Image (cartoon, rainbow over all chains, first blue to last red; front, side, top):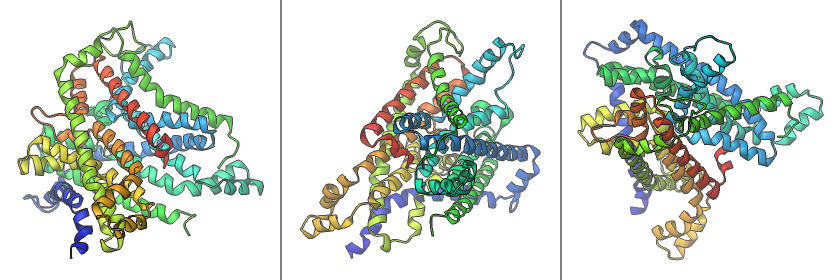
Length: 275
Length: 262
């Protein structure tokens, strides 16, 4: 009897924690949006009927998509080079990627506040070069949010892809080139398809991370570039509109889970090494 | 995989790595500037912003809270996560397969949604103290590290060794502690480090779980930045980066940094 229960006793405490402090509270948040006294789906109608709220959603999608595309491109180039470097350089490059990754999001976003401010380095540099005559407003723009987010996620992309690219057997690329494939064809027809599953997993991490971020849009976007995360906080803690906040939360959950489930399934199917 | 690198690729990659590191040096420079606003390159040299951190009590109290929460949250997560990871590997056939997905949920559900829901249901709904909810939130946040990173170590552990110990009369708990645990220590260390640093840096869960006298350092930094734009924040950031350096040194000494690309 005791023996049969052992597995359950071992997973019990952790499962109960997830149940009590995640499934039930988050479930309650989602259920509330469907049990509004004003009617079934009323909170969603309110959300999508408001031009401002739609703008927040579209802006969040746009910023997350651009961030994902840029992070994938930059991360791929960097990881490709890392994978081919001799061991000593490789470890230096990995340190350069891990250090920002382990430094908090607040600190890393704050760095861009110094870079892009009115007295910031970029403005001072452009002024001293004579490229501009007065400081540009770079903070609290969409560009500032995207720049900081790409900065935030490129290290993650590098580390994800460096592992994937290192795992590609040397024989495969060598076989392609010795059979006469030019370097770009090797990249497009051999390396890219083999790296695709890892690339998709990384891209999903970047997209969902950007889509649900708070600190970066708060610091670099401010009120004028509100995104889903900052909007959720504003609804909940400034205007105390909990139904509105729960609706934003529900949309975030649906979007993230849908993307994660669909894309991991796609990544699994695309893996050419798995027969 | 090794082919010859195009020089242009090498240049772009070097630029990417330079841009990854440069902003962090800029923070270091800005933290010693003898000006009342943030600027770079620093003008003059002063350590007054570092002493300023210690004069603002909120930084000290929130730093202590952050470290406490990170330590106890990680400890709790390992305490319940290691048995769960063990059971999921050892008794795979006897447990329903959806169970391992349950421990992915804290990664899947957006942190900010979790923080908001915890505030609504637990802090306000159940009237639990803010500190308790904060601790539970962080335990949940880092639970996936405990279950998955330790689980990865267990996946390559040969359980017949443990069975040998038990069949020779070793009690199961002692067999776990003296046979299994030493073999998965790398996974446990990795899980501890990753969980600890994740908890210390967290913003989105803590955001909603602060109250009178309870707040974490990242939240305090955000609050300070909304009112002041002086180099104090730069000096706090430098101290946080020192913590990162310490963590990386531990990772390098115990597991090697290449561990993180796996």
